[in-house]
Amino acid sequence: MSKTFQAVYIPIGVGTFHMPSADDQFQKSVGMLRELCEDITVPEDKILSVDALSTYLDTLDPDLIILQNLTFANAAYTSEIMHRFRDVPLLLWTLREPVIDGGRLRLNALTGAFSAANTIRQFKAEPFEFIYGSPEEEQVRAKAEKMIKAAKVRFAMRSLKVCAIGHTPQGFGFGRALDNDLLETFGVRQDAIEARELINKAKSYSDEECREYLNDALQRTVGLAETPERNRLDFARLYKAYEEYVKANGIGAVASRCWPDFFTSFGTPVCAVLAMLNDLGVAAACEADMYGALSMWIGIQLSGKSVFFGDPVSLDEKENTITFWHCGTAACSLARKDTGAVIGEHCNRHIGPTMEFGCEESEHAVVFRIGRNPDGTFRFFIAEGRALNRPKQFFGTSTVIETKADAETIITNSVLEGWEPHYAVIYGDCADELEILAHMFRAEVRRY
Image 1 (cartoon, rainbow, N blue to C red):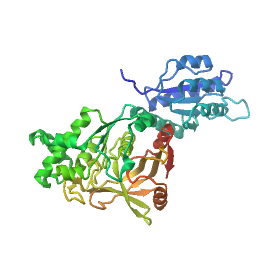
Image 2 (cartoon, rainbow, N blue to C red; image 1 turned 120 degrees about the horizontal axis):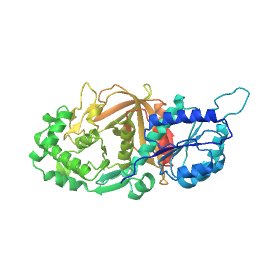
Image 3 (cartoon, rainbow, N blue to C red; image 1 turned 120 degrees about the vertical axis):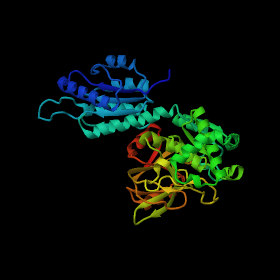
Image 4 (tube, rainbow, N blue to C red; image 1 turned 90 degrees about the horizontal axis):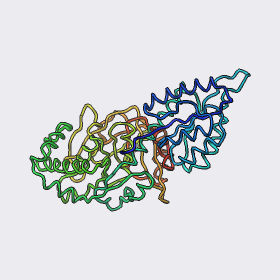
């Protein structure tokens, strides 16, 4: 039986402190955590000795640890946890002192946090997270919720299979991923298939075999019926070949070669096929950019929505905006409602179908990229902003992002720091979760 995600709550303390206060905070903490993660593992009572802790730990196989200082507890508690679970993501939660009245120090939990943190740093190579406050406080709830979301994404990545379809074009090696790097760092397994294999598979289908795929795309798009018949039918063949391969092999994200093969060897672009996959929740990046596809997949998990993939192509310093664009692979669900997911032809090759629309507005948007440093280590690019209500900016698909930080600074720094030219634009407020996830993978963070 496959393992299910397990978040665990470990409340530690010492029985010589004020137990009525500790009891109250324990019950409230359990209630809050169960609202955020109904199947979280919690002990029957407070853990007030190392022996009791050891017995509880024997029952756990955690994917996330929420370690709480109910009261002060010495480093022996944390040492026992770290000895067993040093590689598990950890949130250290320290309770606020409930009463300051000139009398007894009831919990002394903050001192316990220093004791725990000092020990954690001796064991863990990656950063851990910290929150201070009571379970009734909104920032405590929000931090715990983001930690749980990020840990669930990390857990899901361990069963994620991605696929490289063909090779990156010449000069696009930034998107090429090694199997061992993906597996060792992210727990992700990579398949590979030549683009010609799917092209040949597509060529083998009859028009009738692909009818349901064509009808599906006609329902999702605007103007597909005006595409030349040959290209329209060949698109349906490709759609069937890609979708069946993805489904049969349990693929969650694809990085597909696109030009020149699909123009020269097939006569129809793959752009709109990747858009259909994105609409179906399968992250699909073009130009065989595997780290772009993985960035998209993470964005889908955190936002529950399709994710835009594109290049930063225009900076407007006065508006403080950056325009992201690509040839036409955006999910139909991202299209502006006044136009719908319009179909056109490729801007350079003048062959369709490709997607041709501006993306809808969103109050929250995050520009995200998993990048690689020259030494092979990983880094996360995170820029917060909002997607504006703008029409298509160029042939293809585009979105205009007003950034929270200075857009000119973002562009200048990103170029000077050698960031890759492809980014995922996530329609949601998930920058904190992305930073937490970066810590879990020991990745450098560049956040704006």
